[in-house]
Length: 119
Image (cartoon, rainbow, N blue to C red; front, side, top):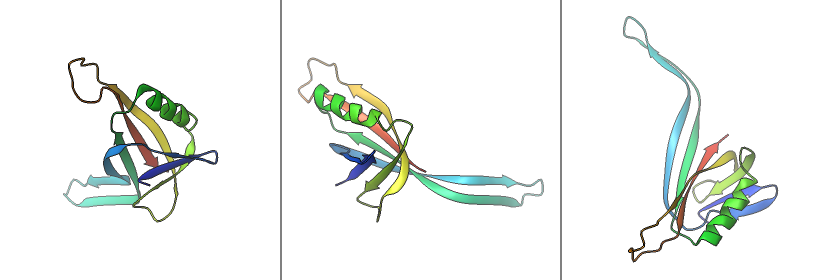
């Protein structure tokens, strides 16, 4: 398992992952005073994972997207190989990319970018 999403009791593996990035979002504020002193009030930090899949067939991509549509804008359970336990998160399909180059010798399937935001 690299990454899994659980929606309404059903577990969905994110397929064919070849790229993952993690951003850290700090919740709070940081400002300088007129005298140059730094004022900071950080309440929490949350993570945002971005996964990009390898190319897959249209039918596989459609099946995966259909499964994720149930999770759209809902809270889900998320786990990956770096977490010790499931966390609450939100999942969005950021982009679906299709290669239309008919002369290409590589897979002409669809790549999907998924964003998982920690609650």
